[in-house]
Length: 155
Image (cartoon, rainbow, N blue to C red; front, side, top):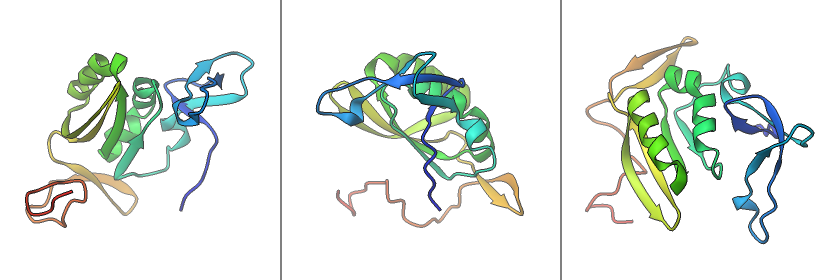
């Protein structure tokens, strides 16, 4: 079930405004401001009771604050992560990958930014059973991965 929360994800609870980008609302960025109309909060606080198999993060320069604010959820669920990284955040992003034991499965290059598909480096993803998250090894035979390109299944 989908639910819209109307908040920005970050590593802290704060208010701010969205930058005004002419002709491209999708490129607007969050700017902290005490009296701002937009509320930002940690994803771990907002999504404490949720479990995820996949996270999609496209937050125009707030990638690392969003990841840091989701650390408990990422540790608990070990989801795949599809994330857009803007060029200025790239070195800090690679440090995050090492620190959180994730590796890059696929890369999609674009001017000024790159999309990455990430998986837990140990091949484990959390399995939620009976309300408790545990870890299971990746199955040896699995359902075809919709993100995997092979010579038998061209894009």
